[in-house]
Length: 178
Image 1 (tube, rainbow, N blue to C red):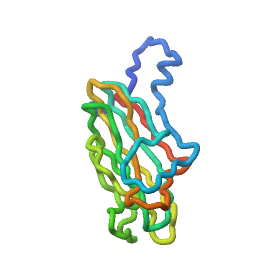
Image 2: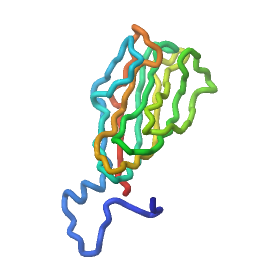
Image 3: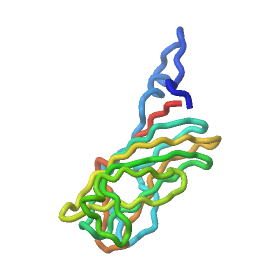
Image 4: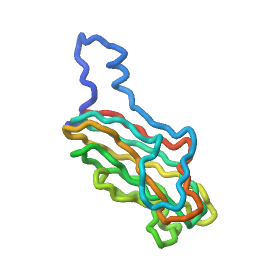
């Protein structure tokens, strides 16, 4: 990775086209309605939070999730799917939780780094009397020779008939930097 790199490369005298200008913008996927999952701990793709990635490219990832469930119950387990050979990490600030434990004030504002390509689940759960929590994250993804999609996969952290919802307003954003 080069330190002052930018995408795309611009050259003196180069014609600025709409396609070139659009390639400089980040692209986003938003949830316009919530998705609720009940009685499942098997992570599956979110129907809305999917973005295409090109082969041999470097992206900065930013996301914000609004998660709701009955406090201290089902929670949310999240991970990402990426094209074959892709690497990267992501880190979030929010309430981290492990199945079977009750989150406390000290577990809030956790900022932990996870390998984006391994599919390791990360637990998020509202605590106490707060049934909704916001989670913000940042990371990067470096694709190899295979293009594809960056997809959020998620389920309940602990299976419950009480639904866990990833609410409207949640989003992911990618900005290609190389």
